[in-house]
Length: 180
Image 1: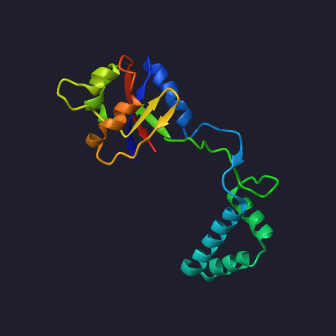
Image 2: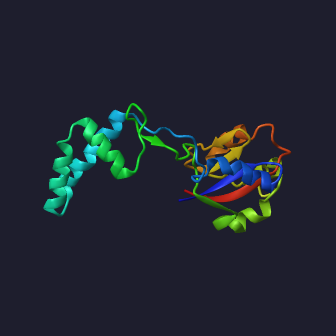
Image 3: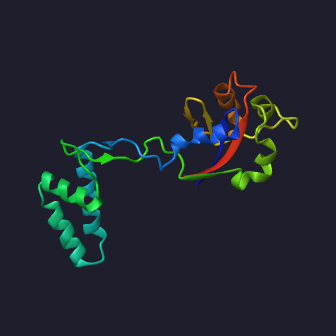
């Protein structure tokens, strides 16, 4: 899925630096991705689905064998099968960026016809264009974090956009096509 993302930053280089913390490629320190019990429950649910939908008897028999394991045995099989590391309490660990919002991006991208003339304009000029209709992105990045309101009708959400950009009229805005 492609999303038009506006980044408020002094320069294009700084805008790209601000996008970086939201990359799927950023590795973070291992953290518990979900509680042990939920991980086991999801794994067992998948095995039950396999029993109901698998095309081969071999797959169904293997799923039944796995479901017969106690929680500890099933947990260790599941973690090994998925290549997941567990903490000392058996909770699955992850180094996937929990703040990830994109896997790649490009300046302008599929919106180049609209965004190229707007690259680097002030927030004031962006929000108050001469034609009266500002370009409303799917998400906005400002210093301090990723703001991603669930805009359904972008034109109706100017209040959200104005609130997020308050006091930034003289700052510059850059537009990116972010893929997720």
